[in-house]
Length: 95
Length: 495
Image (cartoon, rainbow over all chains, first blue to last red; front, side):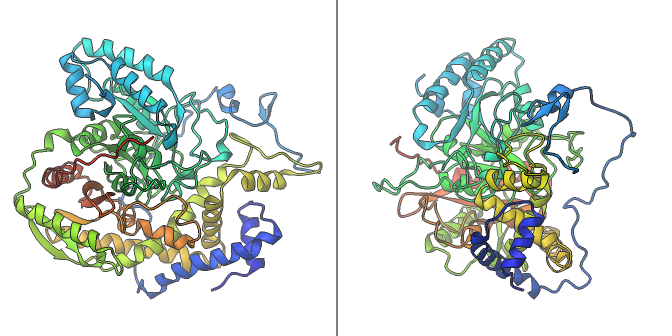
């Protein structure tokens, strides 16, 4: 499988990373180098093999669905680039 | 005592308990060494006030006679660990200005035991790299040089600052993290000891996530005894990390007897790579001889899927990273890009992430996005997870056959020059992890022990891989190897 410039642009869009048009050829070429390396996995017979979920077979722990933490609005917002009136602030989302 | 910063953890602990030295003296000695070592660019956020405050408290605690081993010992913390009120950037521009409101479980456990934090250590951005060249802080530099050549060498990565700081005696020990070899490769490059414990031994809570199914924290120290002491403090169940195990943590130091008689050490034939330097091949054979001389039985073994570990890793790790790093959106923490008139929320995400992530991180996030995207998920991601199952089974089979530990080289080469790999394609850099990455995929404990110098005078390490949850036994085998190898070389001070 090989990635062309339009695939590369699509991946960048999905990843929400702005890539300028003139950087796309180099990016596509890097992807192809890495994917070429990954292609080796096709040599392995994986018929009937379960995909690994976790190295240690474990059931994730459960707990009561109750509030265990909270009331720290100031701390939650302390590192926000833009916080106003107790909220995270972002550019207008809805026209 | 002079040069207190040159002590290891065990020696310093014993000196503190004997009343020969105070934690404040140890700490001041390290702080002085750090200030003289800016050329190494290892400590990127220094915290002398916190250090001296904790040292004073530790001295009080030691006087009561009831202090744990780590009490009063000055250490460095990798920048990947969130430390309350202290910059924690994962060496990324996107976390510029981030000061966590909380402390990671591992660094909290160290602090509770009385360890003294000297500051935060350089690393590859988000722990993605093998040479510490992807850091927003600039390269960390190894204290080692090739003879009289003054070319700057890499301390390895991603825990490059930790390795450089410990090797240069800027601190007694440091924390590292290891997703594909990020503790063991830099330890090998700088002549120190580094252990990655079994997945689930250390809580990942408060450690900036790279690939959650692979990441583990561990100590980077001047010798195996120190690794045992520090690892014990770092381990333990944490309800805040659902993958941390509830197993009891043994007294690892007490397990260091040096007696490995009758232990079966496996030598995997698949680790004999084409083009491996003769020096590394020789060191590996010598390591096996040393363990044999100590009473172990050397057994040839096969781990047939070894070749596929690196490509499987470069699907699974970027996939998990693309998911984990989705949280850096310029909204909740860190740095938001300057927006133009009329830019909406999508432009905010795209510009913030383009400006905030370095080249290697962007590349891995996008590869991860690709292998998880509709139409490719089965072909890449699910196939890689199946191969991972087979890699783990390779290890289970040899352990079931009675193998106690596996001996391999730690790295395919000695340290290389900073900038020397710039022109190489990314896969060339990834090959650094060829001997270490299998261990993360299988969730096993692995330790790198310095074992010799190459012709240019640079350290080389050997790796021992242990059975799951048997770090104590692994440390003991490493202790026997360390005693036999007798590695004592230190870099000459040029900085």
